[in-house]
Image 1 (cartoon, rainbow, N blue to C red):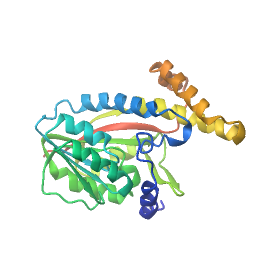
Image 2: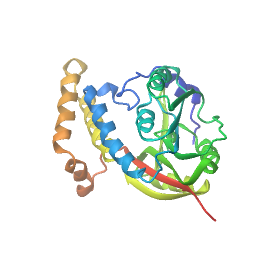
Image 3: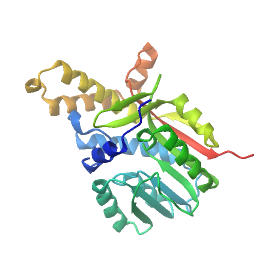
Length: 270
């Protein structure tokens, strides 16, 4: 498989819009800003449940933290949060959150070379691994595994595909792996998988994104009315939530093409 061009990944995120929609890849579908807020709130309920056993006086490491929406959420719940972001554009927004939360330490740097002697009760990877080549994913996870406190976890949140890995090689470079790919990788890193869960809020919004993309391909640009179509699509999905995400699976239809899963990981014990 062709390697990801990290220079292109960096250029893409330097140009990203520092908003709730930008890092969620929801900018170009005509969705209202409230769509990003809805998705974060819905995902945060899942994250709160999955991390409910993490001690409240614990330390959190958020790698690839973007504008800091998750870092901010963790800062409200845990004693200390270290948030590492490589994009200067997104880091500026992250820094602002650091001025509000004294227990939040923003660091501008490459997540793959970040070194720390600290140990963490929670390491959060919120859509980072898909921008790394497999060898770098393995190196990073092997480096992180000894940093987990007893009883702590690594929580990954990655976009996934159902079959073979899919790589995008244009200006936006990414590898979408399957759940089984990640299970294999985690095993190579000395990590045990405690729990895997499909990210239903992601799937709901991704259904809308792929529907709007089909509309854009079918309809000439001057007739697309993207803002109106995006709003209608989003609110229609919200009205049908949560049962609407179950219909394709019940009918045996692979829709949407992209999914997303949470992975709860712990260091293997001998």
